[in-house]
Length: 104
Image 1 (cartoon, rainbow, N blue to C red):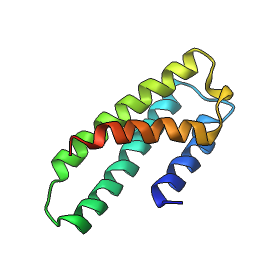
Image 2: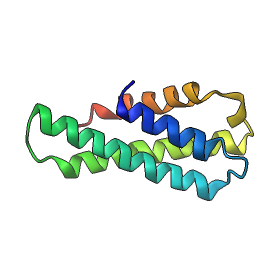
Image 3: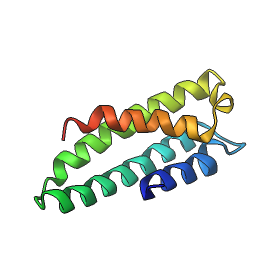
């Protein structure tokens, strides 16, 4: 399992599945996703190309985290979060990342 997946699953279980979930905690989750995604992209970028493309990485990471927040918030509003497993929510997040990575 990749380190990014481990971090995302940990945050899903600690934040999203917490009994006192609210929209503020969803925003915190989104910020943590931004941090995890941007750090992972920067690490990959440094290994592959070695160039300094951090501004673009932060832009795409922000786009990912905004889309993730909207998805999680909609599930929360519709009372559907508890109908998914942590792996299913991770796959939704992973698909958001894959959709947006092409812009790098």
